[in-house]
Image (tube, rainbow, N blue to C red; front, side, top):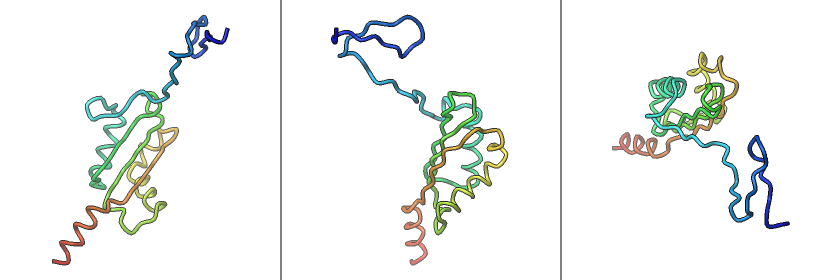
Length: 125
């Protein structure tokens, strides 16, 4: 009896599955790209690009497309000299109007050290 399991991952009648074929379920199946971006993702991306000139920016609607929760990963040289709280406050102030309609925001900020080093080197010479 151990060689057959009932799968209850999906609604409906149980499906017989062999243990070798059981795959873990993926929670987030959609990855953002500029081509398939939702309106909210595009609006957030545009605002952050205009204000922070990031070297790296990823905006993902993790709510399944309804626009209530986003994950933002941003890397900018404008974060230089600011602690994490100040970096997050800067992003939150830029997205103030968009945040009003959100349920949640997962934010990861990072200082762009390569751009900072390049600008420091150019200032020395």
